[in-house]
Length: 546
Image (tube, rainbow, N blue to C red; front, side, top):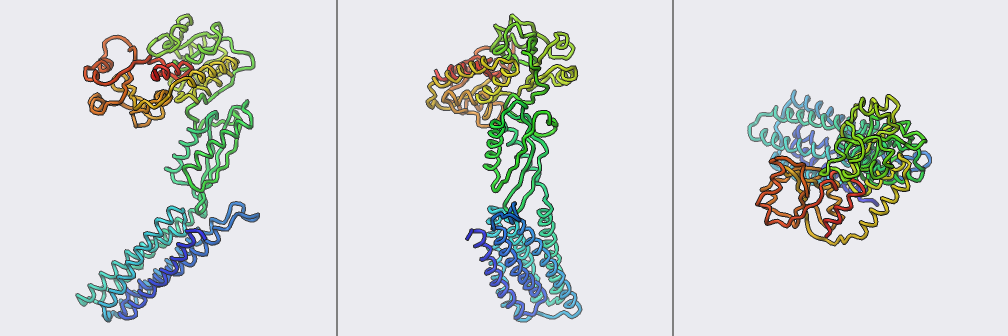
């Protein structure tokens, strides 16, 4: 027997005990308010029985007539419980009306209040158990029972105070008045249980916070896909049902698409218990450009290159420059971005010096008559739109934040340029270099740049530090700033500074030469190795591992 069923059985026993105590308190006092309290306990017993039956039914495995299981039985139970609560509230209101017309003083109020107080404390303790177990098991029946009991505890406390005041002040009308107020509180609790349970029966979508988490997980783990859209969700008892469409490149094999689906499903199930996922794979022609954009890879491939090998390739972005120069034949590169020759940013600055550069605007690019444009994650969006409208194929690359993403981007760009053999050769060389690095633990390191700009967890620099045996001393995710005072107060085992700067006077870069840093072990690496991910990034790992 499951723990949830044992809890439900115990609820019946507790409800019967509380009913006996509250019934006794009403019998010896004759108080209308205590009658209302006892009547609600009858509902508690009925609710506990309904919840127990529903949990037994919902635990039955799926069958031919119920392929999705029987979990919704718990929502029916919660609706029944809500209706019973409402009926109890109506009965209490009627009894309160009668007592208002003919008020009477309670008998033996001290004994009655003591008995009712014991029952209230018992209810409070058990409600806490139900709420904790109901949340853990995501059981609507247990949660509905817990909320009902908490409402009962609140009203019982009010009744105890009220009956005590009646006994002390002699104001007899307080008794039916408190009973009526108790009924209104019970009525509100019942309506809330009904509303929430009907939402489950009507396949209400998950809360926005949960959907945001799901979108983030799909975007992070669907490596190789283009986008996800038409996401739909619902809950049935302990189970969460999720389905969406995943768009992949038309050339992708079924095995590869299935591998992506398995990875996404595993990430989602690790975060959400009881999740049932259905993923419908679609070719890139079905992309809507309005769903979840897949992150961390070369994605958003729009208008694939024609079958002929591209002969006039234009790069619109610094990070795209790194892949184009590494993979394309020099004569096939029509132009690179203006930053391609900046040695502080570009790892291919020397090679790029022999190639024309172009500003990433549509007019200048179209004048070069490109047969493929490759863009990066930032900027040039308007130019991309115009280029696509004029029939120019565009490949847009997201940021490569680790070596897996670098491999994927090399393969994606290599396929677009029809240089797959060269891409695989670069990947093999990079992996060989990584395998030869002594990555024994070396303590925390911090990569500190101009103005204290620092890459944290989940960034390319973080992947480089880990591959070299260092932990990233920056514990925040993404990018942030570490103040000089904080750095000096808690220095890392190794401070990593850029080997060169942009040149010219700059207060932000002068910070990197502050005398206070002299006491911290420091090394310097080329900033171009980390500005954009690529096969060259392994050089940063080698430098940090020495």
